Image (spheres, rainbow, N blue to C red):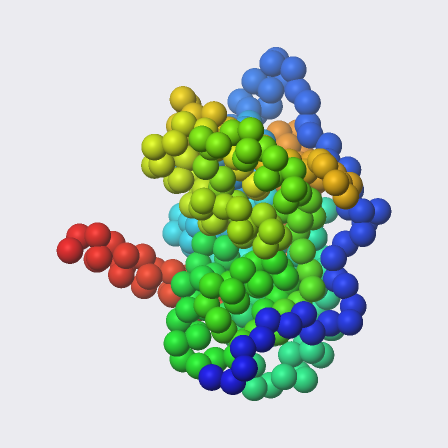
Length: 361
Ligand code: 13P
Ligand code: SF4
């Protein structure tokens, strides 16, 4: 293998400025309004032959509703898999835009709606398709791996799409084949994967505004105050947070860690929307938020994604009632984007079989 690099190629910094990030505004509902909206949405889902697929970072109300109505709550990889397997003719995706787009790319025959089409993602916004394509064209010898948190056009230029749940496995597989990568858009996830696999990769310079806000010194202090706590970290966090982790993993992996580890206390470095599912999984455990305050803090997001927070019961009911906010994707782009996503799902399925096979043995 040639000299290993994990180089941020770009002179340009693709991370968003705080002024480009909307404030996090969480929907507030009184008990009566919440009950009325939930009943209305439940009825509309049946009438529209629709199913609700929600990400773990959405509100407890949305997660509760998805699960109570035959829908699904999970990480981005499993949301995509569920969308392809469910029978409903309409998928309502509560999450951020790339999740709705992935559902549409995989299921062109289905109608895909979202409560709010402005629910973006700083990684997706920080990877403009034209600039990314131009960069890839300069390195035709490299395999292009993009995170699911990207637009359909960026996926269309890739060889592989990955999510945090499968990134390490897949890159280990590619490293074994001697491939060199372009990795986009998350520089922190990319640096972590590079460190773990030793693969030669050129990194795009994007980041997640939520995970980038965790503060290493403040985390060290919190760990010192709670030496009995295990530290759980999503790999979109910077390396000085990841190196303090007991467990690094996707949102599903972090929920599983709370459920399975014998520790009673956890410090969690990811969006605090995940606490709802963690508390359901292990009601007796103590969960502490990893600090976003401290030296150099801007606390743009304060550990809750401003775009995830744009999903609520009001706009969900509205979209089901009136049918707006449909995800539409240019067919030529969709046809190219579907290939690396299918490759991802096939790889994930095969890996799952291998893991289950090992457990059985
Ligand atoms: P997961 O794939 O782990 O759900 O992560 C998606 C995401 O956007 C995390 O910020
Ligand atoms: Fe994107 Fe970060 Fe929000 Fe996830 S938490 S959707 S990576 S901005």
